[in-house]
Each structure stands twice: as C-alpha cells, then as structure tokens.
Image (cartoon, rainbow, N blue to C red; front, top):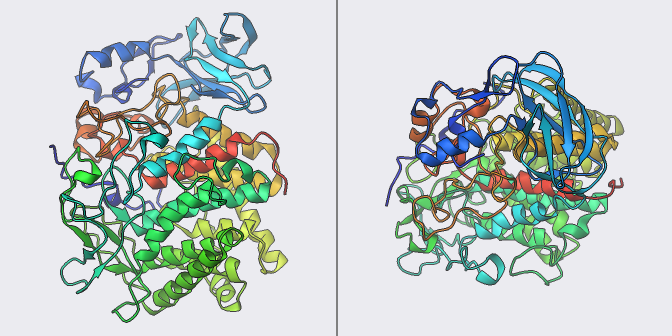
Length: 630
C-alpha cells in the first residue's frame, strides 16, 4: 500500500476574507497562435507533457469550443467559450445530431481571461429553444464535445450527487441492490476485525479518560476521518436543500423514495433521512453530562496515523481516536441540530425535540467555552480543521436557534453579533466550513422570523447584493465562474458552488431570472465549460474526472477497485499546488488550469462531503421545471 504524508486540505491557508477532457487534461492549457484555433501546450510546468501515451492522445482531442458537456436546459442560458486570439467575431453553428444547422450566429470577442490566460470569445445560442440529444457547436471549423438540450437534464445529477452521501456512510453495509456490485462493501468501523471500530473510541492521550460511541456519519473525504465542522456544513446544506424546495413548492422531487437509500418508503423525505445519518453522528460527538466540557462537541475522530491508499473501510486496522472538543465543533452541532428541530418537526416530532435539546445544550456549552480552538498541529492521521475565529459560528448557531424557537435570547445574540451587519458575511470568495456567517445570513433571509421588517429587508438586500457581485465577476471573465481569478484555492469548486447557492437564494427572494441564469452558468463551468474542457463531475459529460483521491474508489491504483461513482465532484483547480503530484506536473500553471485528474493529487482532486453537498443543492435547484412560488 502507498501511504502519503498527506498535508491534506484542512491544513491549507485559511481563505477567511482573503482572496488570495481527459484523465490528465490538467497537464495542458490551451494557448492560441495568432488568428486561429490552433492549440499548443501552455503551462510552463507541462515539460513532462504526459505521464503516459494516453495523455498525448487526450491533448490532441481537446477542443477550443468549450461547452457544458452534459447539456443545457431549453429555457436556460446556452453559452459557450471559444478559445481564439482572433480579434474579429467568428461564425458559429449549432448542429443537431443529424448534422443539420439548428442555429447560427457570430461570437463576441471577450479578450484575455485572467484566470486561464486564454484569449476568449463568447458564443451565445440561448435563443434556441429546441430539444434533443447530440448537439455540437461548431466554430471556425472546430466542434465542441456533444451535448443535449432537454428539460430533464439535471434529474440524474440531482439523484447521483445526493447518492454520494450513502456511498460515504460509515458503520453500515453499502448494499449492492442500491449501488451496484462494484460499489457495495461491508460496514466499516464497527469493531469487526480488523477494524477497531467507532463504537467504543478512546480519546487522544490527555483529552479524556473514557470512551465514546461515535459510530455512523459520513466519511469526510477520501480518507476515513469524520470531522464535525465539515460534517456540520454538509448536513446543513442537505437539510437546507429540502427546506428551500419545500418553500418553493417543489419538495416532492426530494421526498420519500426519491433516493437509492435503505430508508426509502418510511414516510420521511429521503434527503432528510440521509442528513439524519450524519446528524446522529454529530450528536454522538457531544461530550456527555458529568464529564469535563459537558455539552461541547469533540472536534473529530479518525485513525491514529494516515491510512494507506488504497484501503477499503472495513479493512482499516488503525486504532481510532477522539480529538479534544472545540468551540467551532460545538457551534456546528448547535446550528445543525437547531436546523434539524425546525425542518424535521413535521416528519418526526420526537427527533426534532431531541435535536433542539442537543442544540440548546451545545449553545450553552459554547458560551461557557468561547475560545477552545482545535490546534493547527493536530494533523497526524487527519486534517486539523483549525479555526480560531468563531464569532461567525456563534452568529450562525444563534440564527438557527432563533429561527427554530423565536426566543428573545437567541434574537439578542443575532442582533448583537458584528456579523449581523457586516459586509464580510458574504464575500467574493464564498463561504466554507471555516467561514459560516453566510449560513446564518441565508437562514434569516429565507426563514420567517420575528426580526423587524427593516432588518429583514437589509438582510435580504445583502444576499441580492452579493449575488449581483458574483454575476459581475462572471460577466468579466471568459468562462463565467463566480469566483475571482485569485480564488482558485484548495476546493475551489466548493467556493464556486457555494457562491451559486447565494445566487439561487437571491432568485428565490426576487424571482429575477438573472440569478437563475447565473446558477446555470455555474453548472456549465463545472460540467466542461472551462479551460481544461473537462467535467469535474464523474459520469457527466463527454470527458470527466474519474481518478479522484479516495481510499476505496481507487481504480487507478488497484484495478479491482472502482472509480468514483457518478455524481462525485472533484475539488478543482488549486493554484497553491499543495501535493507532490501537482507540484511535479503543474508547475507554472494558470490558476484555472492548476488541476490534474490523478489519484495522488489530493490538493486538486479529492472528493469531500462539503463539496458534494452544494453540488447536490444546486442540482436539485437546476432540475426544477417550473418557476418556484414564494
């Protein structure tokens, strides 16, 4: 087995208010010779050109006509980026699968895209409302990857992106009848040899003198760790996806028996059943009554040392350890449990009451211990997830508790927080596990509450203003990505998707079509309209990421193991190049091209629950085929 030293994504530099087509397509970027569509290797670090013969063949196939390779909605924007140094517009044709010309026009010259360094044109065929499979866009004799135009385009992704979480479940068998034989596996980490299990886990030395049952939950990423702060934002997003759809009158698409999970048919919406698997784990991470730091949440649980790659979960023989409680983890528990109380109440009132009790206890414990931080040095066997600024987490938790209870104490905690009026709650680079004030802001903007009308107007205006900022960023780029050119950090695709959620929320508040268009163009970027001509979502598009960093989905290292299942989102370009593979293969890359589809590149190509959660949220939004009602 190969074991990486694995500094991992959780050790990356914090981004808090700082902006700083083929399996290996990240090795090349498109560069233009004057006046035409001739491609040449672009990244200075591509001196190795290819890791094998497949790379060279792949490079030759990359097209300068970049589209959403999955396709477009009939009533949505339909735009493509064309890489060309031509200074005059070029002729484009939209051709059906039969080769007939369905539409034609001229590109708009956009100039150099800062993030990719490429000279770009825009081809806009939004006026075409026909449907069908196998369209291609032809510009100056060069064809795009094929794509569909159909109303049900995102139905499959809605299901697959959500199914990611069942695949990542710990403590339960993953059933072949639900996922197919390639992805089925026995339960991991239940104390069945060689596992030492998660049912009776001791603390690290000096943290506690007892053991805790912390079974269940989701494996966070490509490793076998489980982290409260990353699990918290992920569970919140899944529950919020359902809550948004319920407000919009479209929740049936996320209802009971809509997902491939064991709980289907139990009368509870499947997305809530999936979130509950994680919520139960998060509540098990609470320090018991009568123990030091009672009510706080342990920060994380994982192997004592980094697990070898590949290792199936049930074959992991490492000892497991609980890591000391933290204020950030405790506030994640308070926020997600309070949201649970509000959203689960119509389906399981007893569970909702339990969630609220846990949330109240966690809030009180966090108030009593407001500065207990996870150490940056705690990164052996798992990421540190250190976070020394938790005022935003207090704001998020207070917002959720207020939305759940309407109680004055929580309202006062909301209105007295500096985040309640701060312009930094919603930033150009997006929210994430360490920057959670935006989650409180989104809840207060969308969930009926007792704040003064003027306050609610201001909160909602901040959401639409942030969404307008993302649209302005997209309009200034060749690829219409809702992050700035210096925003390609570890997990950039999650920053992209989280900003799209802000735009989708602005659409829900205003019904302004420009916000929906922004969301759909964000999906275009993820699904192939980017400098690599690559879909970052496994199974979607003509050419997609398939070698994401994962202990079980490790076909690149072991042919008996599968590639990631359809609907898995790669982390995406990371200009920091924070792993040896990226450093060797991508030196000198333009920010938007700093990605390689290699299992060893954990800083560009890992999967995580907090990256797939916003993808699932957006896929559900994009799949809706009627305008949501207020």
